[in-house]
Image 1 (cartoon, rainbow, N blue to C red):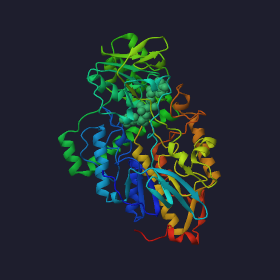
Image 2 (image 1 turned 180 degrees about the vertical axis):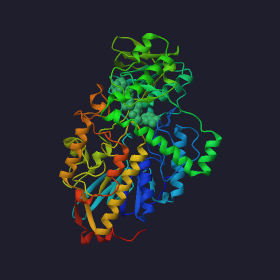
Image 3 (image 1 turned 90 degrees about the vertical axis):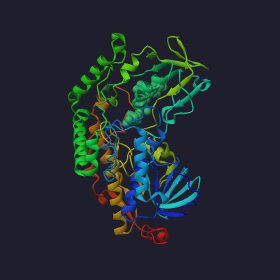
Image 4 (image 1 turned 120 degrees about the vertical axis):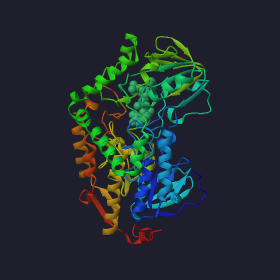
Length: 508
Ligand code: NAP
C-alpha cells in the first residue's frame, strides 16, 4: 500500500501503533464506535504485521484459518484449512480496504518516543514524521516483530548471503546452493522442506529437538467454499468446532500433563513415519515433556531431514568463518547461504524502551523490575491511558491469537466508552489490582507444562518467569475482559486545560 505524504495531525484522541491484526482491529473497532479521531502509525509499508514481514518459503499459519481470522471479517475463500502467508496477508489487506479506515494509516512511520504528561493528561509522541499528542495509545506493535539474531562468534565475518527468517531475501537465488539453517522452531520447520526442494545441500543446526505432529492440512472442497459463502452459519459452525477442539488442549498444558500423551504419541509416530534411520530418529526425539515448547506441525519436516542432501547437525556451533559453520567437534561445513531462524525478542518488546510513563521510567525499565507485569494483559500501572494489545501473558500455544486480540479490543473499547461517559481524563490500573492479577497468574503458572516440562523456552524471561503465555482457557480470558472493570483503576477527571485535546472533543 502506498505511503502517504500527508502530514500527521498535531493531536489525535487515539494513537494506534502497528497495522497487524491488533492495530487494524483497533482501527476498525474505533471507527465502528464513532471514534474517528485516530491515526495508525506503521513502520512498514503495508498492513499485515507479522504476515507482511514473514514471507519465507513455506510460511503458513498453524492455527486453522477459519479461527485465525476476525470474527467480524469472516472469509469464505480460504483455500486450505491452514492457509499460506500470501492468503492471510491478502485477507488483511481486503479487511483494511473494506473497513474504510485506511485514510488514517501512516505507513513508513516509526514512533520514536511516547512520554506521558500528567498535567496535560496526554501522551507526547515523537515520530520520524513529526510530533503529535494523543489522549490514549493503543499499542499493537506485536510480540514477534523484532528478529533475534544469534550471538555466534564470527557471524559478522560470514562472506556469503545471510538473513533472518522474518527478513527473507527473495533476491538470493538458492538453486543448487549449500545452505545452513540455524534453528528448528516453528519458522525453520516450514522453511527447511521448501529450501530442500531447490538447494543443492542443506545443513540443519538443531539445538533442541522440537515435537512435530502431523499437519492435518487439506484444501477446502468447492462444496465447502460454496457453503461458506452462501450459508454463513456453516462457516460459523466450522469456526466454533475448531475453537472448542483447540480449547481441549488447555487442561493438558495447564495442570494435567498426562492429557498431552496423545500429542507425544502423534509426534513419535510422525518421526517413525518420516525417518527410517534409528540414529537420526533418536537425534530428533525431544528430551522434555510435550507442550513445554510450542508443538509444531508438519508432514514434510522429518522426511526432509532424512533426504540424502540434508544433514542434521546437533553439535554446538562454535563459530562461523568467512565461508563455513564450524561446530564444537571441529568439523567445518562450507556454505554459500546462512538462514537464521532463531526467533524473536519476545519477553522484552523493543517498543517498551520508547514508552515513558508517569515517573519518567520506560516500560522496559519498569518491566525489568516487575517481570513485565501488567493488568489483564492490557494496562500497566504508571502508564495511564496506555492499552497494549498482546501484552504480557496473553500469548497462546494452542489457539488463535486473533481471538485474544478481539477480547482485548472489547476491553479497550469499553474503557474508552467509560472514560467518555464519566469525563475521565485518565485511567490507570491500581498497583494492588495489578499485583493481585500477576500473583494469580504466576501461581497458576507453576503447575503448567511450560514450567515443569524440563525445557528452556522463549516463554520464560531472564528470571525464569513465564511472562508470555495465558495459563487458562481463552474463553475465561474473554469473560474476564468482557467489561472494563473501573473499580480496579485509579481515575482522574478530565483537566480543564486539556479540553482542546480532550477525549470529549468533536469527532473527525
Ligand atoms: P523460535 O520458536 O524461537 O525458534 C528459534 C529456533 O532457533 C529454536 O530452534 C532455537 O533453539 C534456535 N536457536 C535460537 N538461538 C540459537 C542459537 N544461538 N544457536 C542455535 N540455535 C538457536 O522462533 P520461530 O521459529 O521463528 O518461531 C517463533 C514463534 O513464531 C513461534 O513459536 C510461533 O508462535 C510463531 N510462528 C508461527 C508460525 C505459524 O503460525 N505458522 C510460523 C512461524 C512462527 P532452542 O529451541 O534450543 O532455543
